Image (tube, rainbow over all chains, first blue to last red; front, side, top):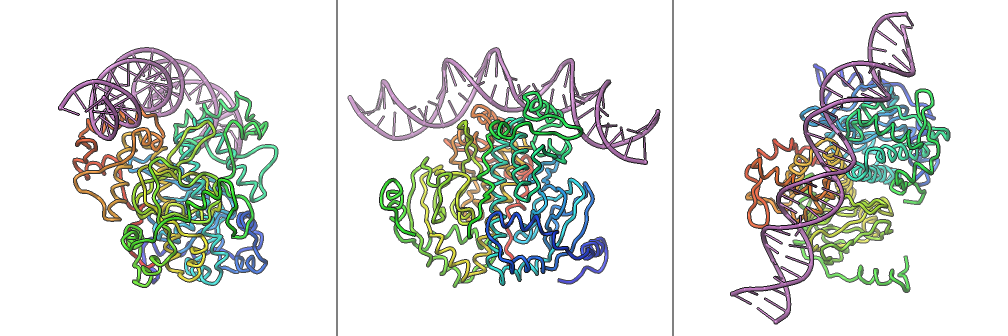
Length: 264
Length: 264
DNA sequence: CGGCAAATTGACACATCTCAAAGCCTGTGG
DNA sequence: CCACAGGCTTTGAGATGTGTCAATTTGCCG
């Protein structure tokens, strides 16, 4: 694979090759998502850190993986939120996945070559890229670690199925409530759940694209949760009054997130 | 792993252990889904056939993988259609995936241990089961084959994302049209697309659970496609008048199915 | 304080659901 | 060969849910 000689691609490569080395705690969230499913030896942690990561930052709203790109490296999200976005020809968008720190955002690109969707930064993000070549080598030398990566893909599949259920069979307020529960459960895995509340950094327009409804109706759904007393406003963000109530309302069962540590 | 001594589990095991040997062409569809993505050596084909498959049949409407089961083997679909079904506590169902011959239905269970959904036979099915132990061994001895299995999971993820887009942003008639296009494209991969038409063996009630709408509205959506002239009735089933028109109407782009042969 | 993005609201049109009744097809028994 | 039962499809009518448009309010930041 040769480096393109000119044109926009050359620029892209330059951008991709910059980036600073990774500090140890940059991988904290990633290690947490892995160890939530299986034990990691100290050696394996070192192997992870020793990968040729290239740290980089990305500003809100930038589309750092574009639909149809043929990628040569995969991106790990270190800090911030981003979302998978699918488009239709008529321009409407649907958020098909939400990623938080510790998510290996486009591991699928390693397998699929060309991605079926874009990845957009919802907040400013810190990311780290590794080359597919390095991953390929890892797959040979570290079968256990590699198996865990595959499990992450399988888990994302389970999350996708839950979203399909949410879209197909839950009313917007229930869907929204379920989303809040899921996000909080996933934040808990990486040790970032705040008991007092939750901060969804999503605009109501973005939430609408996630819930598959209009902005106005998103607003009304939020209002409904507020009126039922499940969430309260607190300054700019919201607070969940009682997580048990919200779980019950949303019919939330975290089993699909596969959070249990077992040798696999 | 010992065989349970009594109770329903004993019965289940008995059922699972029966089953006859696999004939060569039973794997035709599976080999086709693999070779649509990468070349397979003759040796690899032999390895696949040599796996300790146990052939079995399953009748329509039976739920042959149940939500929460902890499985010790994975199921390949040889003949017939089945669907992944997710439930909510209130009993409503959502079909979160559709499987046709050649699909490795619960490969995910190998990674997840306990499944987040059920698998239901939509028609009478012929299946083949392999033990997770055999798969584990394969993963060590046949890295290339194994990588292809992982790719199948990643592709299913892409299909899930398309379904999320369909549910969130396509109107029921467009969603239905898209489904028909997808099914036909997937049947083509295994060499079973009929130029003259299509036969969705799904009841309108099942289609409703897939489209996330009511039965009545499913019927009206079908009618609408009929009135636009995209499909015609022919006896009990339907015929697509013009696939190009249907693709255009559904905004169908098969890229997400990842049908191209490349070394991976 | 002014400006801007985001959130909120009201009014009305359109989409979808529910309930209930008919119609249609197919296999079965007389 | 006909009548019938049962499962599926189709239709109508009224109740709800959701979208669109357009205006207003809120909160943040310089």
